[in-house]
Each structure stands twice: as C-alpha cells, then as structure tokens.
Amino acid sequence: MEQLKGTGVAIVTPFTQKEAVDFNALGKLIDHIIKGGVNYVVALGTTGETPVLSKEEKKEIIEFTYQHVNNRVPIVIGMGGNDTRTLVKDLESYPLEGAVAVLSASPYYNKPSQQGIYEHYKLVAAASPKPVILYNVPGRTGRNMTAATTIMLAREVPNIIAIKEASGDLSQCMEILKDKPEGFMAMSGDDNLALSQMACGMDGVISVAANAFPAEFSQMIQYCIAQNFVAAKRVNDQLSEAYTLMFEENNPAGIKAFLTEMGIMENVLRLPLVPLSHSLHEKVKKYLVHS
Image 1 (tube, rainbow, N blue to C red):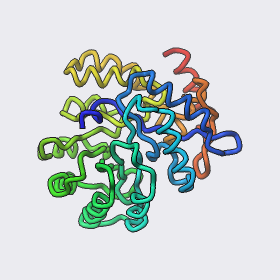
Image 2: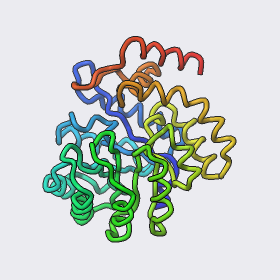
Image 3: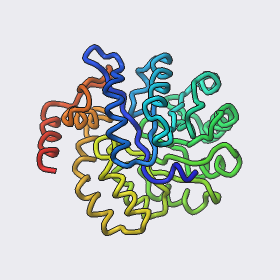
Image 4: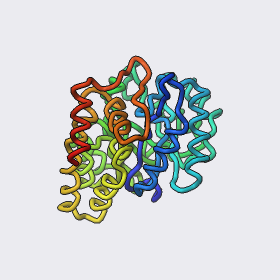
C-alpha cells in the first residue's frame, strides 16, 4: 500500500508513423518518468489509448514495461472493460505477475445502476490475482460511481484497496475520505484538482501531466504530503497552464503534443483520436519555450 502513495503516472502509448507501437519511444518515456522521481507507473490506462490496442499489443506492452522498468519502481496494470465476463477471463490470462495492483475503470457505455457497478467489481476483485484499484471516471464511462458505492466496495470486498477518483466533484471526494475504512487509499485522477484533493486528505495521484513533467509534478505532490501547501501551490501554479492545454481538446492528444515537442515520441494517435489542432499545438510550443 505504501508503494502507491505519491505520484503514479498513466503512461501514454507511443506509435510510429505507421501506427505500430513504438517500443523504443516507450522505453525513452519510461526512463524520463522514472528519472523524474515518480513513485510508480501505470501501464494500459485509458491515457494509453487502450480501446484501440489489440489484446496481443496489450500483452506485449505489459511484458516490455516489466523488462524496461526492471524493478526501479512498482507497476500497476490497467484492466478494465464493459463486459464483466470477458474482463474476468482477461484477469486470469494476462501476465500480471509483475504488477503490484490492477487499475480497473468502472464499466463504460452500458450505464449500469450502482448495484450493477457493485456486482461488476465484486466479480473483478474475486478474479484478480492482484489487489484492485477502483477507477471512477464518469466523463469517459457515462456513469458516476457514487461515494456510497465506493465505500460499500471498500468495506465489503477485501481485494479492493483503493480508488482513483476522477469525477471532478470535490464534495464526492470529501465524502469518500470521510467514510472510507482505515487503510483504503484514495488517489486523485484529475491533475488540475490534485492539489486541492491532497489538501482534503487524498494519498496521491495517478497523473497524465507527469508523463511530461515528472520531476515538477512529483515535487508538488511531495510538498502536499509534507503539508507544505504554500510550496505546492507555487509549483502547481507553474503547471496550471499546461493542464489546460493538455485537456482542452483530448487526452492523450494533449500530452502527446508535449512529449513530441520534448523529443520523446512521434505525434501519432490512432483513430478516432487525432493530434491537437495546429493553433493549440502552437500554444504548447510557446508554453514549453517560456516555462
């Protein structure tokens, strides 16, 4: 559990100009992130464009990540889906032995009831060989997982150990923090709200921005953990414009634009996602020149 405090990074998936997974760039990105001092990495989160990766590609990315990280930091693997039966089979067949936990987004598109979300996660937790981190991201899934559902899962399902909360609702976050059982961890899933959520008592963040700015973002979170919110705000203020640029059109198009300008990867996404518009990309360039 201590391994998951602080800054985790939802790693993007680099592609070549021919849209193949670019493992050379992925290795470069992993080195950049770890050198920046993050606490752990998350492979195959939604920032990694998992909806457009084949099962074979996902397994190759997992194995490559294990080998390249080489025990330098812990690894969390994203394992979500909207077909509970298929997800249970995947949890039994994917190479998860090198992970410390799995991050599982709540079911998308189906728009299940809260009871349906609860039953889904109950089966996922029973099938998972690793502890499960819930992931509430209603902007992507179309259905919010309420604080009450989160607390019920935290109390009743032993293999569920944490939540990545990305509802953007501070009141909901505070309700989770107030009622969660001892030892259950809460992580921010919104870079622009991480400072506020850490001040409310969250344990850390699974970040997109830390792909590009691992040192700065990690420092900000460490200041929060040390209760030095004045220093944390100073760093966060420097990054606030970057957050806006990253998420204005699409994630991961925004963060990929930053990483392209930093020389880490090609600016390639798979449809239906496309790179940032020219005007917004120019703002990214300007930010990096003046930051």
